[in-house]
Image (cartoon, rainbow, N blue to C red; front, top):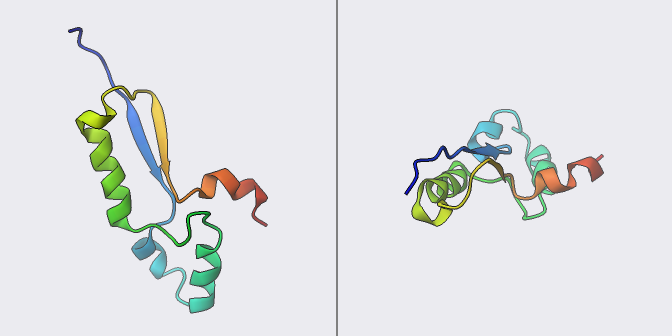
Length: 81
């Protein structure tokens, strides 16, 4: 087998705890969460789960990718006003 370089990065959207201090009002948190197609703001644990997958054998054929871990936000962001 030939040695190769694998380059994958994860790009997380807002993470619940990191946003908590910015979104201190319940209405602001709920408004932000509605902008994510999968519902809610992802947790640090959910982002870590994806990163763990990328480090495992299941991602052996992935390379040169940026994996958005953002609950679909980047897919619809141009539509959010």
